[in-house]
Length: 67
View 1 (cartoon, rainbow, N blue to C red):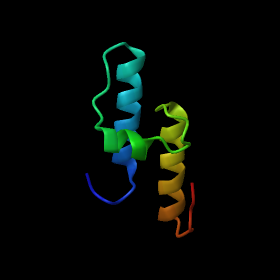
View 2 (tube, rainbow, N blue to C red):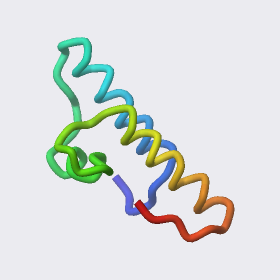
View 3 (cartoon, helix red, strand yellow):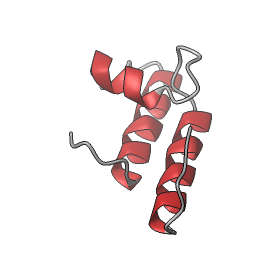
View 4 (cartoon, rainbow, N blue to C red):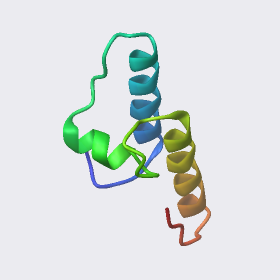
């Protein structure tokens, strides 16, 4: 866990989503769940991963992204 938002964060969110969708339970800590829930709807979904990737891409392009 680092303080940077990058592709690995989206991967963690997608992995958690896939695990829970398959009934396997997730592997994220409470802090990771809170950080990964970008839209604040109390669940980790593909929308959260998309938001993380968009944020990362905009930051890489030199823009000033927000959630």
